Image (cartoon, rainbow, N blue to C red; front, side):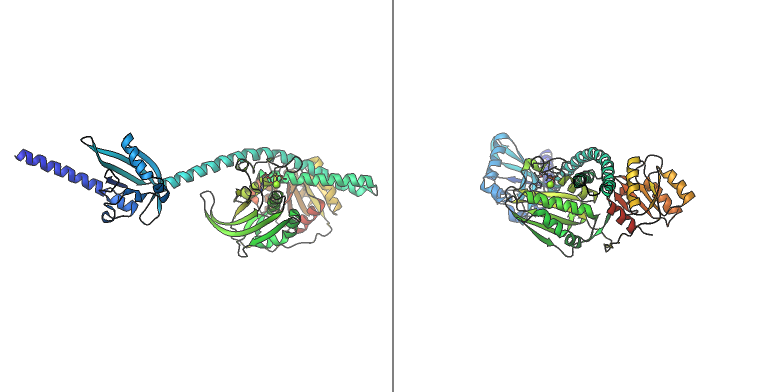
Length: 505
Ligand SMILES: Nc1ncnc2c1ncn2[C@@H]1O[C@H](COP(=O)(O)OP(=O)(O)OP(=O)(O)O)[C@@H](O)[C@H]1O
Ligand SMILES: [Mg+2]
């Protein structure tokens, strides 16, 4: 008798503790259904995840947790059928809370048998919305990482080639200047020279795009107010699109300042606008817009300015979309496109600490959006300095003898006396012994000291000596952004003259 009583009490105790366990589990909705899907038990997890109290939900059909589409498709009853026939049903999918909000659920349904008869189903549901979001973020980041590694590899390749090209172009364009001066009236020669000139400019524009893609362009970033900048280049853009295409602007006047290289920003915009024009052979509208954007993208979080170029053109097929930013990828006929426009845009945006995104719909149009981080310092008013005829002695520091000859020629034409040395150490000796009025140095040079180290050293020992740096590219240039003015090779005589005139003295 006592024995039986003890057995009963144990059973009661174990059932009680089991019930307490099930009812108390807060992270899982654990509940039972009868064979038709009516809810017969409920726990605190169910209440927490789905929002219903036991009073509200007991006796209701479990299909109310499904989305309307799932219900219309008969998914709830199909799930019970599968659980019955296969012994288990398992799924991840959207479910609906009491308030109508959605959550991503992990669902398990097990059939329960008593004496060989189906008496109902046990259901376990977990809310894994957060886990799913994290997983998706990781996947996006992995994709972005793989993409950026691919672009880095391509960048190294293109950067190397473009650097050598720039020195060649510098020699061609500089020598042309001297030839032009001595040609006289010979029309045939003049035509030949002007053809070489045009080709050199085109070559320079192409290498410049390549360098931007390789993120090795020597940049002169500065705080820019986009709304002002766009006014200044309206005309260039309008000429770029031609007459069949309308240009529209939608610029938020309160758009934050950004920090970027002005000429690269302009080249980037022009590249996008010309692409938009090419995508609308029968005409259409290109809209340039700018607005502030606060992003929470893991790789680009914070305050950004979003600059978009939208067209109403043919759109980009999905198999093409993956490749458009690669250098030399083009779908245009030979001679029409080099496939460098978007590579430049991509390199520019990333170098400025931002990114570029594209959305496209076939037959409807395409939107490219450049995202650039907000700049906190105020843009300076661009002061233009009229170049004056030069005088005094320039110390030219340049290791390549041909480039040196050309640069000497240009400096002399501007009225300077030129002394040339081949490296930084020689430059320091020359300044020590003879004194000069201005130093013009290449950045990339053999030897222990490059042009930047030279400039930094001179700033210490001769703080008043004006210094101008030149480079075809430099990774190092990125480290001193804005510290010293940098002239890009190849440069023309007027650019050299303006750069010298702007030097702080
Ligand atoms: N707005 C657009 N609409 C449709 N397709 C576009 C658009 N912009 C770019 N594309 C596609 O992306 C490709 C690459 O563009 P990208 O600007 O890099 O090179 P390109 O225009 O072909 O040549 P380049 O700009 O060097 O003259 C284009 O050939 C085109 O197929
Ligand atoms: Mg293009």
